[in-house]
Figure (cartoon, rainbow, N blue to C red):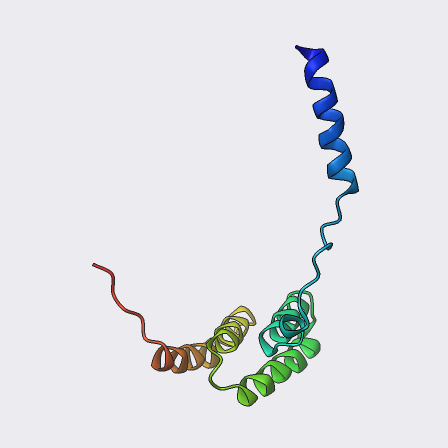
Length: 107
């Protein structure tokens, strides 16, 4: 039994080591989308100091104002504000989000 399974282990290890996780790059339409840009800024926000976080939040807000119909950007902005302990601004942003996309109760 071990003799039979050995080649399968070797093949699995070979494919694991040789496969490239980025072999299918994202299409340009996804890379250049404002949602993707905000997602990258949110990643940077996680490790930023207070001065950088203010600049990043300003950039996110600028993108949000350019694309007011994009609720994903609004959602990321609201949670970024709350994460940076700007609770009042975050709650106000969540209110705007709720007006755009109200939650439907599930019964």
